[in-house]
Image (cartoon, rainbow, N blue to C red):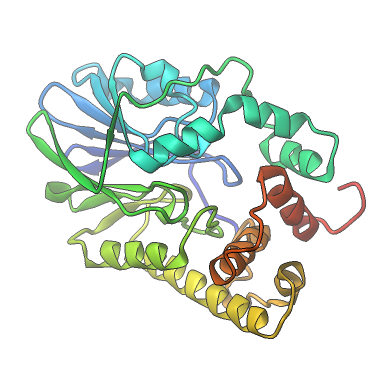
Length: 315
């Protein structure tokens, strides 16, 4: 089921909230958000390269000219949610402590190395990330970190930041605007595409889904995909529960992780985009069940996904 998205642009969600939604689906095509108050705004995430981030800032200008961006929240440490930070470095940039850890481990230099490698993983990375330009990106890290939860006042608008990680990554922040009944979820919610659990544990992500389902919200802005409702949260939760159950049964039967990945049938989740992320998710389950298993680095994980996405020699 390919995600159906309108051209990239700003969606007015009401009550001072806006979404910036990617125009096309696929790896790295992330969403952002804007919360406005009296005379100032909070930006939720920047984008994967400077071209995309500049286009977004230009598109938000009709709002931010009167309410300039004073605060930026990076929901997590994947580059498609912070590589554009240098264009808003004048604002206070805030992130959860685990997010800062991830940012220090994988930045634009590491992505340039991955996408230039003459390996199966490198060729796959070029195929999915070839639309992005990392060459002029200078990493700008958060000016302020928080633990657990913090509340901001953005020109009279209450904004709650809740770190629900480690889950998708080492730190995952949801941005809740109570008066607007709106939440920006980062990559705790993928709408129309397959969740990927780089860090875990699975239990934390399931708990994060339950938290979202319990919030008094009507509008959910996912990290990827169209603006949605709690139905998308149910889908993410159901997918994660299913994969954990299927991988656990194969682990118990002594099946290696790569064999288990190929053996699992996704059923009603098979039509989600980027289904090759199953390789990462199964590996995460296996490491939860046997912590002595060595971790895989980025190139190794992308190599496993490449085998699922295109099991043909040379990609």
